[in-house]
Figure 1 (cartoon, rainbow, N blue to C red):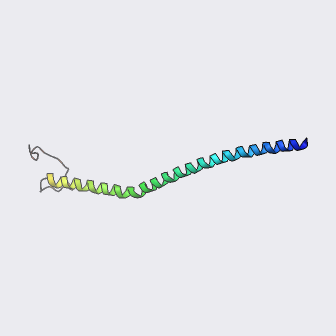
Figure 2: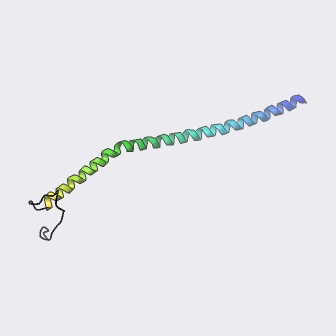
Figure 3: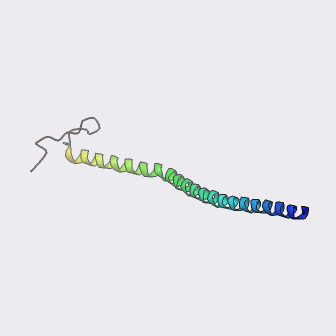
Length: 95
């Protein structure tokens, strides 16, 4: 009779171990999936961080060129665009 009790206890322990193994396997897969998602997110942010200053500087440069082109196209030649405010009078606008 004691052997049957030991077998039942071992089977009960084995069932618990199997359940724990399944839970750990599911947790491992979930952790691996979370890790992969975080790695991809990190790579994306590193790429954005690396390229952002270059793109921002290019945009600022393009804006600078555009503003200077407007100054030189629409201001009278006797005014210095660095010191005068940009204004468009009715005389400079032709319809």
